[in-house]
Every structure is written in structure tokens, then in C-alpha cells.
Length: 130
Image (cartoon, rainbow, N blue to C red; front, side, top):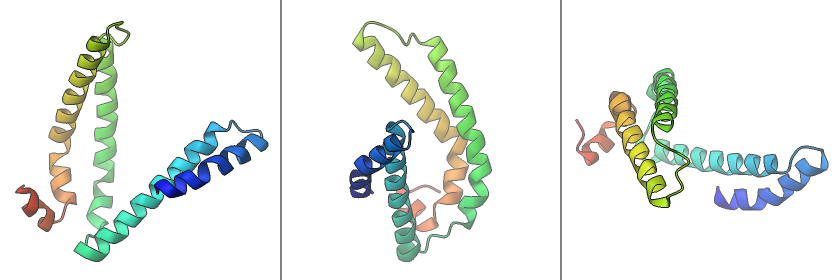
């Protein structure tokens, strides 16, 4: 995926620039293609080696979308409470850490059952999650 992104960046940026679209969209598309290639390769590997099936994952997508929307709203709320434009780097780092911990913890609380449903039993046993 990284190599594909590397090889597609400049050609897609030139192409987009030549057809009148801002060049950074070419870089975005190259990154998307590289990332999706990595995801597809990972999915094929999981399916072949540990017999991971995606039917249950597809059923959970609506619940995950709802949780993502909630996380975005929570993140926007945290940004309203914490001063984003602090001039102190230390304060910015502390604010970022607080946001990360709150959002990560909330995400795990909201999606713990979804995560358990998606992962196969063999992985849950390795992670010692029941």
C-alpha cells in the first residue's frame, strides 16, 4: 500500500493539475488507493489463514456508523470545552492527551460488544476477552 501510494502520488498530482483539479486531490486519491490496497490484502490474509468471515462485520456497520457520529459530536464538544488555541505547547499537548483518553475510553465503552461480535473466538481467546 505504501509503495503504491509512493508510485501514484506524483502521476496523479500531475494528472489532476493538468485537468484543472487541485493537485492535492491527486495525493489524496493516491493515499486512498494505497490504503484500500493494504486493507484488501489484510482481509484476504485474514480470510485465508484464520477463516475470518465478514458477514457479521457487515451486520454491525450501522451500529458502528452511529458510534462514529457520536464520537464526532463528543470530539466537537470537547473542543468547545478545552482551549484549542492555547499559546503554550504544554497546554496543547495536555489538551490533546485529555481528548484522546476521553474519546478512546468512550469509543471502547460504546463499541465493546461490537468488537466482541466482530472478532473470531480464536482472537478473543488470545486477547483473553470473554
